[in-house]
Length: 310
Image 1 (cartoon, one colour):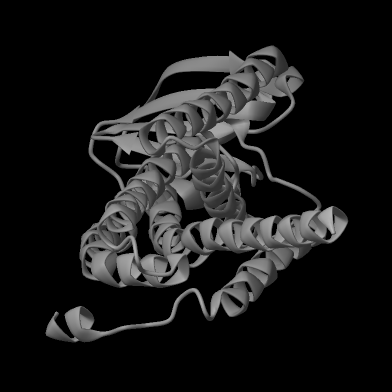
Image 2: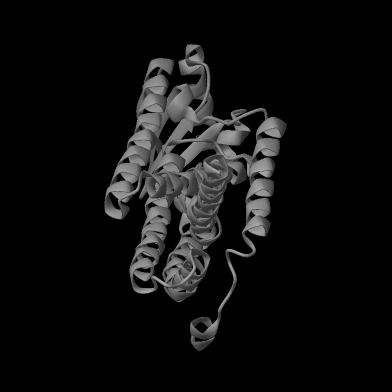
């Protein structure tokens, strides 16, 4: 940690390199979107069938997955809680009884010594899926609005609030790019993970902005670029350590949390890294870039006024 305290990295001087990296990641997301033909929505947003099946003895989700695939159904999700397994099938609702019979027969063949009972079946229509889609959009819009208002109020500038949300959108879009590349279905779990990433990302950004605000008061004779660089270097240790703890926990969930937590952990791993990247290499440089551009325009305006007065 002494190394981090002694470093003096010129983050702002290299901002265009970091902007290029962000641009390439965004292009990768667009490319993945085009290649995959858009987002792969799960049953939560498209509608389908939710089956709850109980076993006399606990079973592994991988074995259940094989049994369902052997029934000829490929588009589905699994969740388990003890001896209860939930199967979410993204299929046309007209063949409800056919799917029920196929799945039960296939599972009974796979587990002949483990009695199976269908506890219940729910049919999620497209109207419910559309409602959940709207609620997910509203959740993100509400989060963005609250972030803009809070940051703008705290730092007495709407620009800081807008930049913080730009960083969050940057993290969400690129995270979705990795979801598309992995060909994962967009479901409620992914929405929850993305909202969690929003929380961690804005927290890092506010900590950095707060340090910049303090240093602007203390280092009044320093150049704005120097203050930004100094602030980033000062919070570097804190940002890396706190994010590393989240990253380690997310990795543990990814490798040992089972299938249910796999997708959530996948988003958290990517989002944690992107949150650090956007805070240091996107948000702070954007604030600095705006100040530099504003000062240039101000100098040009003053110069033009001076010429006119002559």
